[in-house]
Length: 117
Image (cartoon, rainbow, N blue to C red):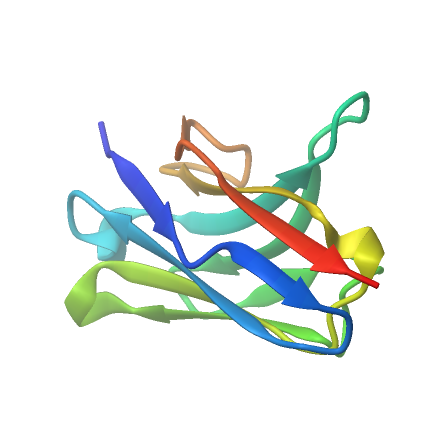
């Protein structure tokens, strides 16, 4: 089991930046993949970014070049740096963890990100 707590969401103007944080309740060194997903009402949750225990990263097409995922193993925390934000980035952002493979087994409670035009 692992508990995930997100923070850092909020309201920002288009073109601005935010950094989300996800603190895990145990060492993330043993977690195969941690990720960020987002969801808007009426749509499926979509992958934003993922980082593996080996440091491999991948991103959703809509955020490539604008968002950066990173991890601090000493703090058991994963970050999502979001630059050049667009109104279409507005969503609830969820942190996830997968002990094996890439499919999330654990989710945080979500943090709202709102980008105004």
